[in-house]
Amino acid sequence: MKVFTILASLALCAGAAWAGGLSFNPGPRGAVAPEGDEADTALELEYDTGTRQYLCVSFYGADRWFGVDFDISQFPEYRGVTRVRVFSDPGWPQPGWDGFNVALFELSGGVPGSIIWGPKFIRPRRTTPGWVRCRVNWTLPVGTDNFIAAVEQHYDYPECDCYAVDDNPEAGGHSWQYYDGSWGSYPGNMGYKNIMIRVTVNDATVDVKPTSLGRVKALYR
Image (tube, rainbow, N blue to C red; front, side, top):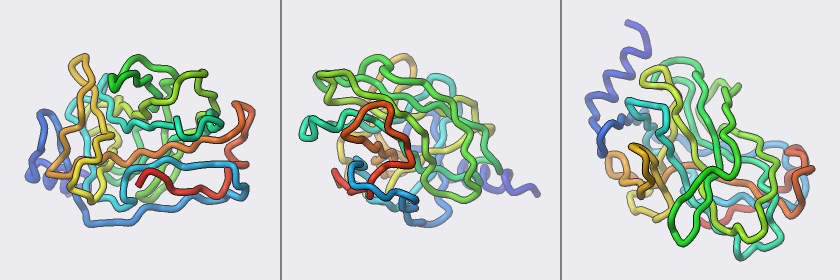
């Protein structure tokens, strides 16, 4: 039996906490720390614990977005968004990467809005589970202090890539999902409610190269 058939069967047996979703937990695995960051000018914004609890996908990919909101109002000089990191796994729901979209959405008055950067389609290179990087190198407009970093599954199950939720069963209140034409708070999957997406911001503008990012300081946990 092929590996992807076994994994898919396990996921279907596990059930789902929201309509149209699947989840699979092959066991806890810690987050992979950023590599090659030498300077001191970058901040990585995060709400997740760093430990993956479940891998998740939707039956349908197109126009299904899953994201995390961020507030940089306390860091007014940090307007250069240099990258988005998403925890994913090339081994499920089928071996290898199919690719997914990454985008930033506006968030005003606690209400998600339209795309302000992207979408950018990426097909990761890494061969093991962990943090997938998407280069952004874009400066937030003046007055934009709140935004959502999100991923679109893009392809239908099982020809798709997964996202992850962490091991904290308490909702942090920063995770979102978009489907059927509207945004809503992420209700969670199998009792876990915090999506593992992180954003790195810099105190410079769009000409900052990802290789110059600083020693990443964990915030928002």
